[in-house]
Every structure is written in C-alpha cells, then in structure tokens.
Image 1 (cartoon, rainbow, N blue to C red):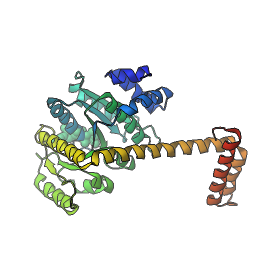
Image 2 (spheres, protein in one colour):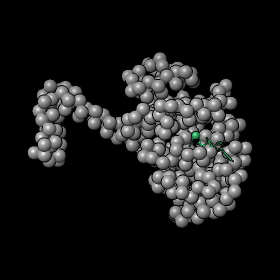
Image 3 (cartoon, rainbow, N blue to C red):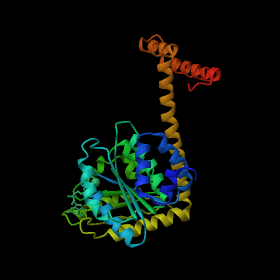
Image 4 (cartoon, rainbow, N blue to C red):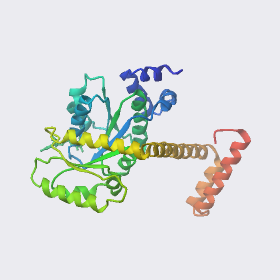
Length: 323
Ligand SMILES: Nc1nc2c(ncn2[C@@H]2O[C@H](COP(=O)(O)OP(=O)(O)OP(=O)(O)O)[C@@H](O)[C@H]2O)c(=O)[nH]1
Ligand SMILES: [Mg+2]
C-alpha cells in the first residue's frame, strides 16, 4: 500500500476513515487516491439496508441492532442517510444523540450523510463510504434511509440484505414506500408492536409477503419488534445472520456483490460522461451551435446528439484533449 491515508484506514484509524469519506463526498482527488487502495480490500462485509416510512423507528432499531451485533462479537459500521433535511441537520443531530451510547466503542463507526443537491449523489457517496468501512474490516454495515424516493432505492440496491421497517396503522405509508423497495426487501420488521393494531398490521404484511413468495426464493420473514425496549431485536439479528448464510450458500452473495460493483461502475461512467460532454460543449463554439440549433428547433435532438458525439470523437482523436 502506497497511500498513507489508506494505510491508516486499513489499520483501523477512525479519523482517517472519516476523512476519506469526507474527501470522497467533496469529490476530491485525495479521496479518490485513497479509494483506489481501499477498493481491492473491500468485499467482505454484509451490507444491510434499513428502510421504511419516516418515524417507523429505523434509527432506534439500528441503535439496538448495534448492541446485539456487538454482543455477538461483530464490528458495525453505520451510515445514516438523511435526504429530507440536507441543510438543517436537525434529524442528523437526533440520530447522533441517540446513537451516542456507542461513541466510545472502537467496534462501531457511525456517520451521517446528507444530500448536497446532486441527483444520485447521495447513493454514490453512500456506496463510497460503504467501501471504506468494508475495507476497514467492519463485519456488518448498516445503512439507514427513508424508503420513499429514487435515491433511497439506489441505496437499497447497494445492500446484500434489506430490512423494511413498518409500523402499525400505517397501511398508507407502506403503500407510499417505493414499490421497488418492497420487492427488494429480504426481511420485514413490524416495529412498535407495543402499539394498538400490531396484530392486524402483521397479518396484513404477512399476506402481502406471502403473495409474492416464489419457489426457491428466500422466505422473507415478518418479525415483530419493539425497538424502544429492544424486544424482538435479537430475532432480527438471527434473521440477518440466516440471510447472510443463505446468500453465501446460494452463491447470491458473490452475485449481488458483482452486480453492485458493475452498477457502481456504470453509474460513475454515466456521471463522468455527462460532465465531460458538458465541459466540451462549454469549450467549443461549434458544439454550442448544435445546442442552439435544437433550441431554435432547426435540428432535432437525436441528430444533434449524434453530431455532438461524432465531434467529440474527432476532437479526442485530433488533439488527445479531454473532450
Ligand atoms: N411506541 C414505540 N415507539 C417507538 C418504538 N421504536 C421507536 N419509537 C419511537 O418512534 C419515534 C421515531 O423513532 P426513530 O427511530 O427516530 O424513527 P426513524 O424511522 O429513524 O425516523 P426518521 O429517520 O425520521 O424517518 C421516536 O420517538 C422513537 O422513540 C417502538 O418500538 N415503540
Ligand atoms: Mg432515523
């Protein structure tokens, strides 16, 4: 390993990991250089997405999961994603306070991440952060996100195991969760089982899950919990270990990890291509003229796109520039 920062991360130095994650969020070269060394060391952690409607008790559950996982000798990285309050930091502060009890534990790393306005940026940042924690050697990485938007669906796609947290009397909220997230769920937790209506909610959920059951497919458990007291949380942990074992035995772990890596590559290719094309158009008047022609409706967008691409290829061939 030639990169000093990456070396410190691999040695388990928490502030260095936080620094790499921050640098990657800032799309800084220092972050990229460290990631280059860390990436080959990643791929062992079980990445767990925890999603569900706002206020379902996801953070409370994560906090309890940390305790149970620690008692079982697992180290735990946590990424708390908050797309709803990018600037206030209010919710982030709440989560920080709630999870503070683990602050002194070296086997736990907790980081909050908020969107900075770039579309899809959050999923990319979460992916990068997960790679850093994975390379650092954390056994389990918990990623908490609210299950309502496209960014969240992208984040769920990063996970090996996805927990959808539901609560009683929230039929509508379950409907509001992106359909893709319900499909991606590997286990359901009916939290706040201490509240009235838990039984109905559980049977409603079980019916839904049963309808989608497929032959040879992982049988998705519906587990009741009271995250506030910790009741039912060890069973959630058991289900997670069982799912991990299932993933490894079926070859699905390798498959999901490979899919995730390929997906990550294509996402970044997409970003890079977009950025480079934009830069080239800004720098070349004849490309800008094609954009203007479309805006004046003198040229259709397909034809213009073809010509922009042709032009980019010839620019690249001629001067080897970063077209
Ligand atoms: N009665 C009851 N309340 C709970 C339980 N678990 C969590 N809560 C409460 O529900 C509220 C929301 O909990 P959070 O853990 O912040 O929920 P969340 O899903 O992380 O919320 P967001 O991140 O804001 O979407 C808090 O006031 C918790 O104390 C539970 O099992 N029973
Ligand atoms: Mg939360």
